Length: 406
Ligand SMILES: *Cc1c(COP(=O)(O)O)cnc(C)c1O
Image (cartoon, rainbow, N blue to C red; front, side, top):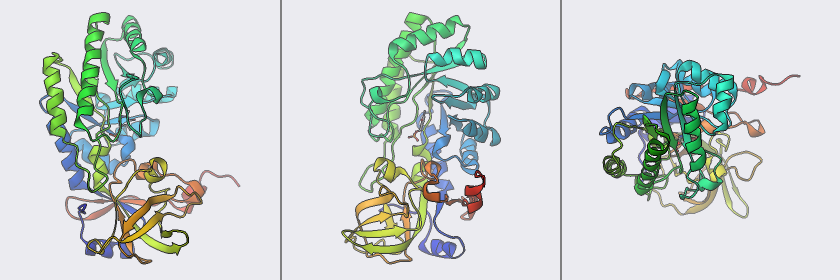
């Protein structure tokens, strides 16, 4: 069983005057996860978590995370603006982008963000278009370590550069007068095995040592990226951050990394488990299979359609009933991938039932799109005070038509 931070009655009352579908985020849960991550690494003086804005790009959420001491990891102009608007500034912003346009580098530079380059060629581009900052980091792609299904194996991933390119990049940056350096890598996503992060740390610590030895630079920080997984399936266990932290600390001490700062750019771990998509059953259809048609669609939550990702689903008030009906849970797009679940066992379900889709707090609403003219849903925050607050209205037809000429 997965827990929900609200009662059945609260949701039943709420849907009376708030149309489904909508997202609800749990403020207490988000604060708790942010604290847990930051506390886990408190042995590293000036450790920093840069929340990956793309996971939940909402100013109310970013403000909560800023209060918890997080910076922002951005990779586009709007994400930089979001960070700026909630008052995250300077080196509390990490700009980890790829295939980046000049105006985004310019904005990052204006904000004094840490610029993390995805290729050696971006160094010249940045110099020509914007000018080089005092601090630069590069994203390393080790090529051979195993990745996972979302990000792919490192060799197949478009991100980062090879070892030879990396050494060359720092050598050239140093020649060009860059004074301060950081180092970045991220090679998996939604990973639940603590050993993965320990192995990654060892690999990147080695690189830092090599940079010192061969190029004569000392990196100020090592950014281990995002990728902490969450248990989407009820039978999965949480990632034990204390195991990650202890393993990384041992290596850090053994390999004499001090005083290098460690950074993460976690998104999913912090907000993922604390978002819920509330939807209603619109139609039930029996053909070769049983289809439960919701009023939410892939436009609201793309992960199942895009990655075959599992999201747990319950029917409000029927949590304790037997899960003996096998069905596909669908949206209304003219696209057969528009399914929240395939061959899922659910309780006996009726039209009008309220369905809760779990763990949508990261890469959920933000990945939504407008295919088929579908409009994205609203977002609510269940505050620490127990009150629901709207933090993004639903899109309207006018939003959809705003970009069109007739
Ligand atoms: C998406 C992304 C993250 C966040 O990943 P999570 O799976 O949410 O932890 C961090 N850094 C970069 C560069 C990313 O692209």
